[in-house]
Amino acid sequence: MIKYLRVLKKLKSFGFSRVYSNNLGDALGVSPSIVRKDLSLLQIGGNRRGGYDIQELIERFNDVLGKDREREVIIAGCGRIGAALLEYREFQREGIRIRAGFDIAPDTVEIDTSIPVLHINEMPGFVGKHEIKLGIISVPDNAAAIVFDKMQAAGIRGFLNFTSVELKGRPDSIIQNVNIGLEIENLFYLVHNRDEDLEGQMS
Amino acid sequence: MIKYLRVLKKLKSFGFSRVYSNNLGDALGVSPSIVRKDLSLLQIGGNRRGGYDIQELIERFNDVLGKDREREVIIAGCGRIGAALLEYREFQREGIRIRAGFDIAPDTVEIDTSIPVLHINEMPGFVGKHEIKLGIISVPDNAAAIVFDKMQAAGIRGFLNFTSVELKGRPDSIIQNVNIGLEIENLFYLVHNRDEDLEGQMS
DNA sequence: TAGATTGTTAATCGATTAACAATC
DNA sequence: TAGATTGTTAATCGATTAACAATC
Image (tube, rainbow over all chains, first blue to last red):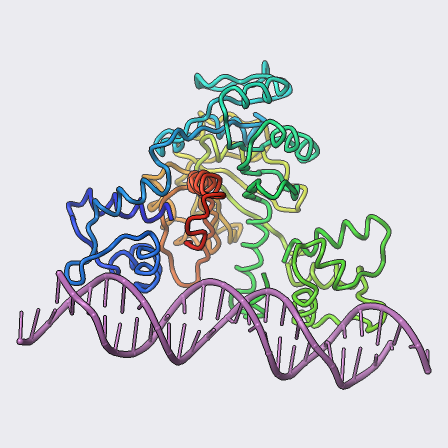
């Protein structure tokens, strides 16, 4: 999805103006068929000879992805990971704005940024007032469930969960897990069983 | 995969000794059929009346996942993210050991841990000497490719990539991407298009 | 026109699920 | 034995790929 946009922008910056399902697929690591299907799904027509117009694609993707809307997020838990995210430049570059960080001990958080760090109790009010819809959870595991509930009650509907707690939310909440420990465990497994070729099928 | 082990340990800590494909599936969020298939793939037999023996499953999973082997990893790039990972407790708890961090300016890295932070030039020697097979890449995007190449040349075969650069490696290297920006972008998209119900199919 | 690429349909593939005989 | 659960096969579902007519 967003990968399309990145590739398209890169292509544009290289001076291309049109692209074939073929090229796009290569760049994205998917088959041309999939590209064509995706694009027709977005109701973007190509030219049966000259491929697709890059500028047109970019505009349509910007539209679909809501790049023009306000894209704001808060962070709950400003420990090691949370603080690193507060200072993470990538976000600005992508047009994502971290409105605030929250912690039970905001005074102890030392970060080199102008983003305010407030007490967790102020979170619901802040979220309501600014109509924030997305939140990052980087609190200790044992606080995850409580903080999650509070965030949901405050109106947040999209969650990036850095804890290893499996959060169960309302049906209209979307939870994306980033479980670094699990990721590494899996890597160990894959690297060790690469050649042995045991069951490569299991999830 | 590793999730099985977590659930099984939890069940054990609750005092259970046997479990049904049914229960396990619920806990894992998959169907009983899948559990049965996975387990038979691992060549673990159950009892057609009493389900599976939890202890037996744990042992078998420990074996397959290589929990008993040395599980060591290095971190290249000790900036915001890298430093946070160096101090990340989850790893120890899971039996993963970070042997060292590497940076172009190791002196400037301030971390509250006994893990050594060395100059990136020492990385190949260190990796070779200790036979490290896994590495985390948390350098700036523009250094990603070079560092990746060096790591591969040094013998690392499993990578956790925190940059937004698409790394292309040898066929026997395994690269796992953790792209936080992309994750968030996707969340924005999902939250906004949840109800509108535009194409929920695209990758 | 001839050549090339789209848009779309049909075929393939793989993974999930249902179902049920085997059996503890 | 009767009841319940496994192990496995067949059916279903969805996603990917192949293929090709439409057409620029």
